[in-house]
Image (cartoon, rainbow, N blue to C red):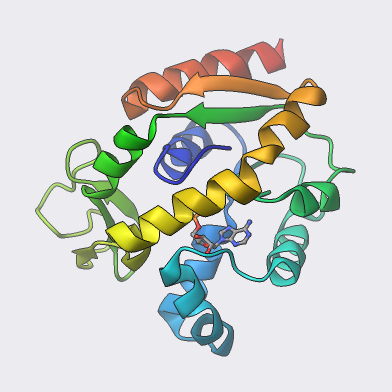
Length: 203
Ligand code: AMP
């Protein structure tokens, strides 16, 4: 959990490299649809660019399909509403990590975020810089700013987060699953805190 820009995607990438878990991110899957220009991708493109949430039914169906039968996975960007959480309440969730960060930190971060137009890999010009400016390390694709990282969409995304997603913090707190980490720290420090929490789960 955590507002847009809090580093969910970045820390998820680090977790999957070190632990035996799969990364399940509706945001990544939806952007992939848009990038490939599928019919579904064309339908959701404008909604995503505006910073609004994509139709719940579709996201719920897609996410449930992906996690079905999987034992070890990290959900990044799901659930984003109480309804979405209720839909996966039978899943044995080990831990819910909430990355917190003040709005000014989030806004400052968006300016530096970049994404590969070819493979979707995420970068940040200060924290996760590519080896060569504006070129993806993984596939050589061009790096651009995500449309929904533009100031207008960011404002909307933060507002949507406050209204629809923030109530989930209490939802998981009541279930005794929630652990908070300061998402304003550098990615490596956040990851080190995450590792401490995940390490405790295994013992
Ligand atoms: P993210 O990469 O997680 O920031 O997601 C980017 C965008 O994808 C969001 O702003 C939404 O438009 C859409 N999206 C991602 N996850 C969800 C979700 N769980 N429910 C609805 N829309 C979502």
